[in-house]
Amino acid sequence: MKAVLLRLAGFTGLPLLSIVTPFLLIPIVARVAGAEGWSSVAAGQSAGAFGGAVIAWGWNTLGPVEIAQNPAPQHRAEVYRESIRTRLVLSAAVAPFVFVLAWSLAAPEHRLDAAAMSMTTTVAGMSPAWFCIGAGKPTLLALFDTLPRVVATVIAVPVILMTSQIWLYAAILIVAVIASLMVFHRIAVPERGKTFASWRGTFQHLRGHFGPAAISLSGTTYAATPLPIGQAFVPNTVMAGFSSADTVYRFGLFSVMALGNTFQGWTLELQEASPRKRHAAAIVSHFVLGLAGAAFLTLLGPLATTLIFGADKSASMATCAFYGLSFLFISASTPFIRNLLLPQGRQRLILVWTLISAIVGVTLMFVAATRGWADGIALSMALSEAILFLGLLIPGLRLWQKA
Image 1 (cartoon, one colour):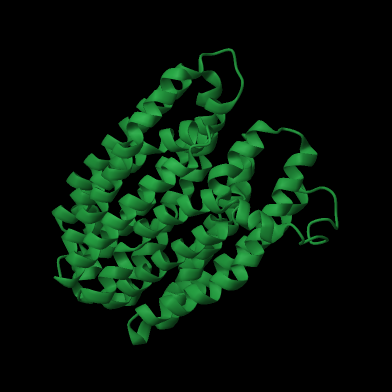
Image 2 (cartoon, rainbow, N blue to C red):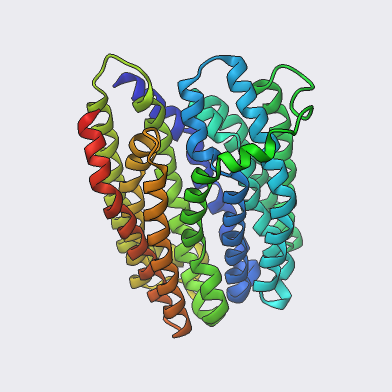
């Protein structure tokens, strides 16, 4: 238990700055952009989240498992080299597409801001976080994933205040991320000259990772679609409050990610302690976090969005409550997916239920959006997350009993 507490402190200490720091920037962006511009920027970031998932191509799900179960430095270096090659190939195709998509979804006077902000989430696909998680090194995660974003945000706040140019934040962040990746590459891959020497197996690896990538993409699709769908059919003034709730919800998901990072390596490592007890600790912790997040979003979400974004961008109680339900189900399903089903090779099961939940969720979102019902879009997302959780619950519990 001491080990997991130390990991919890490491994976949630400095990384929690990535939750707190953007709240220095978001109110400024929301007020500079106005209600119409804010919904455009938020929709651009959602489009970028999908692009980031494509670029990551399953590394965020299988990568930590492969690193945790293979401690040899040479093996880990080769895994990271292959990840760089595959993600660069995908970035060349995905980044321009996301930029154009965000541009087309935005209000005419906010197209550059929306397209630029889409790149801030697209670039997350190049993050080395999965490597740090698998290696059990929260310090590396903080230095090379969290710190660049914190520094970029701190620099961007006065820049946007002075210039009112929101797109400059994206430029600053991308420079910071590229610099950190170059330094991290020297740490993860001590041998020089091998990363870009051979691209022969890159496309074969892309095909081999299709299953985990499809799981990630399916989940990200319905997680990222509420804002673009709403932006396409619902008035911008209505979507402003919806966008605020969506933003608070997504920053809250960092806590689920941090807790998942803490438990994944710990539950998969070979130890004398009972694996079943370790999995039980992860399951209970995620459920408690889900309940706490749901309660916060439901009870304090409208007030929080008013204080952070302004009264004209305040979210409704219903939207916040439905986002709270989504948070609960995502948090509760995380330990089953990351710690039990994926390590046991149940990718097909996860993919099937992810696709079912995504199809149901996205269909209902379109129905709600075409009727101008913004709260219904949030409800659709909650229902899709509930379907995924319930579909994986029994198989996950069976694996837990055998652990």
